[in-house]
Image (cartoon, rainbow, N blue to C red):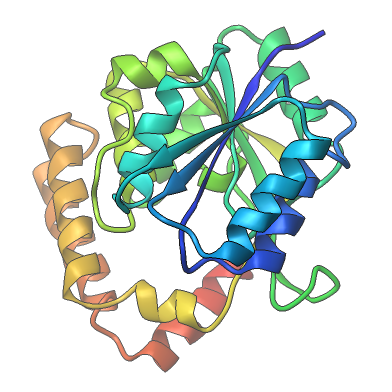
Length: 272
């Protein structure tokens, strides 16, 4: 028996059907069911979402609900939710993705059998509209050393598909608010604390994408987050001053590209 918590947040603009599919995928259809699901209601929700939560509670006795008075954003909502997780091992999930049935079994068995691993993710199938329309597979490095190489300029873990050790995340300062980059900011602080990363080399999660995903990955606010993270990489000596100058220039310019060009670049990178 492996005890673990699942941490998920929902807010008022989430799609109710996507949310229901996400909830069922982490409990009803899992070969290894979680011991606890911590659901953070990030501010007031419409009746459509509250009805799904009430209904799911009847079929999921391990569901714990944390209601926040105001919408605080994903990072701070997860920070509050993590405090309510009862177990050392915590799996993340987003409110519009779908975990494959064997996800928790594979991830929990691997992290339990390899005590040197502190946080583990996996490949993900990126899909549009329904899971029969997988448009790309995000492949990530397997071992810690290769994850660190990628961490210099990118994100080596898929946030909605991670399992991590709660004590280490809390020791690294837990989730903190940074526009669309709260996950990568946490991975960098975990690296600073000598945490060990890994990725299972097959896809265990369906990740929902839309054209809007490219629009969100551009603009001044996103570029500001990128700059903050590269400066932090320099501070913790993950990169040197020359890498800082190069990566900052290339990435920040990319964030100002038109949405259509940025979409084309992402599609090329996903095929590499």
